[in-house]
Image (cartoon, rainbow, N blue to C red; front, top):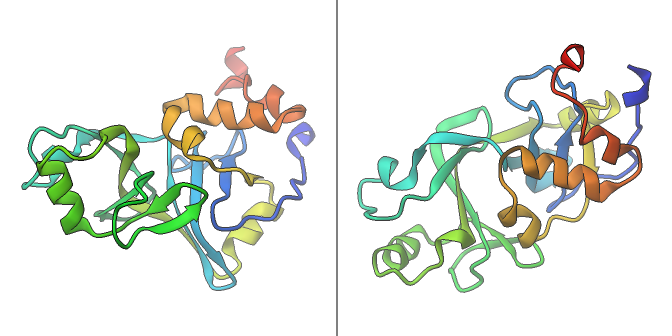
Length: 191
């Protein structure tokens, strides 16, 4: 599969998207897009954006009523934790990942805003667990061509695409050979 040796020269950073190469053998990351919320010499942290779980937020948080937003599987690490990203610049404590895209914030304030129906549900995405890499681990995976880096996470791209559509959309925006990858079948033997 030399065709897939693309040597992506983009460097990842906070706000980058990591797009799994078409045949990444890890089932946790098959055809996924990860939004990096932190990236430093000590390691990296982010969320898989396109892997929905079978539960909704109001099913796992007792105090939430009538807010059936889907919950995504953010990654294989600590799947007993809840995280969120959003477009709500008014939420206290949110950390800006890239222009208009935030991670976390004041959860008590969020609960009040949900209860009083003062937020737009589509401006939030919730995750159980996260994706994490220790010191040097992500760099090694990049050298092995496991990930394609796209340095243009936008709120529109993150929130307006779901499921496999996001993986394809990011590859198409990268253009060139990546556009071809976006149409590659999951199992080329079935083509």
